[in-house]
Image (tube, rainbow, N blue to C red; front, side):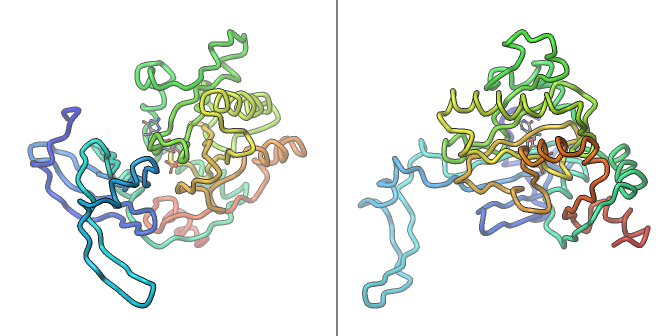
Length: 302
Ligand code: M7G
């Protein structure tokens, strides 16, 4: 596919999700002449404080919806300014069934995953059903996003970089606005799939991410560690261990209980008990069409 997709050739198949609170819509469709489906995710950017007068000026067209005492409400079409983008668009092509399911809105269920359920059900599912990690390896091998790297522990020439090193990158979801700050620490080591694999051995790695990741963010963006939400997803979408850093005043998707685990709590739990994440029953939310849901259903667990 060309770097610039041609939407003249796009045929919409279905709406996967319409999140009215986030002002985001995800659709599935096909580009004529291309064999695989595509997922397109469009999200409205938050208002830019500096350009608020572009919305409230003489060129703005207003249609009155309500006028009652001191209260008035309008639909408004601001003056068009092509320098101010109003939407962010992400495109996944070719999209696999797993990508389509990731965006498909559907019923959710809460699972209490015991150590045994992880070993006998979840682990098998992860091993045969995970999304490709190619984009992660491209970052780690400096083949993609090289110029976007915010911080690389390799710059410190530490001998243990292979074990305790990581790359800090702007997350795909980040609009680039400071008040929506969203960075991702991707570890260099390749054998930690998720929270479940973490033990005492990984404390230096986890502390490195917390301390050096936060310090780099402070240096680059002026946001202090205490203003960041630093967390890990369980279950994640990608089974190569990574940590999310988001600005506390911003509420991106995936920060809810049932998915997000604070990095400081993870470190504390492992310090109390080295095999905490192998032994613990972990609660999380899964979607009905997730193949993991079917595996739990077959065993009579859900
Ligand atoms: P996750 O916890 O595995 O699942 O996070 P989630 O995607 O459901 O949150 C993976 C994170 O990697 C997400 O925050 C994605 O936005 C981000 N991400 C995914 N891809 C494919 C890329 C990419 O190509 N580049 C960057 N920089 N971030 C990505």
